[in-house]
Amino acid sequence: MANASNASAAKKESGSNGGNLFTVIAIIACFVIGFLVWKFLMGSPANFEGGDTEKGHPLNTLGMVYKGGAIVPALLGMFLMVVVFSIERFFVISKAAGTGSLDKFMKNIHSNISSGNVEAAIADCDKQKGSVANAIKSGLIKYQDVKKEGFTSEEASELIHKEVEEATSLEMPMLEKNLTIISTLVSLGTLAGLLGTVSGMIKAFGALASSGTPDQAALATGISEALINTATGIATSALAIVMYNFFTSKIDTLTYSIDEAATTLVNTYRKMRGSLK
Image 1 (cartoon, rainbow, N blue to C red):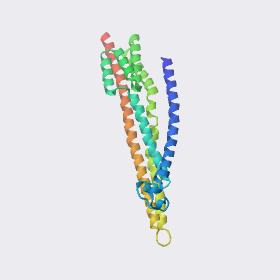
Image 2: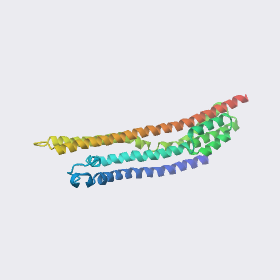
Image 3: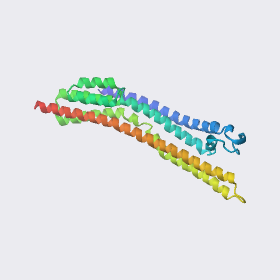
Image 4: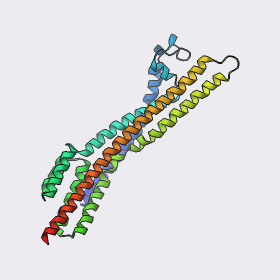
């Protein structure tokens, strides 16, 4: 059992190193792509009157966003990060739930445990796979061990719960990986948008403070930059909030399923011990 735990821990460590490399590459790639989109797609001469990206009036939405200034590519990079890490988390959490329906799997587990058919429950775990099934399987194996040893209900309860907690500590942390990045982007997106807003308003008030007649073009450009950065920052934060709460809810459902199975195991053992008295 110890060897299996060590092998599992080594596997998780290897996966964590690979995940860290993916995270770094994804962050860099998102900012690079954001800059390229801003510079060459939004900043294309075709999006401005006379093909002049500096003085020409924007002809479409892409040109207007380009006028948002140097903060725009950073905001685009953050928005892409939310999208990329959301997709990555979706696949990881879906894999953790297993190959089949989690609700159907849990019903089968409860049915088999309640009827004392632990071998069938273990077979269901092998078929389901994933982090939830692995954690429940560890509890089922421990249940068989304590049943053979004839532990008291309290001792069995402690041992089973401890085994499930240890298995969960190896299986579940990977589900929360990169969620910190998504939660950080909730605040960072808003702050970056605010920075762009302040930058645009500085340009706008600078145009108003100019000597003589205010430069209407400079004033409009400054206000446009402020509003574009505000909108992009809000969009990034809003998407990050939705995805973070969605994935947090999914993880809570998985951990609840594991805890529920462990409780069923303990209650079944107590009934079994009570019937022997």
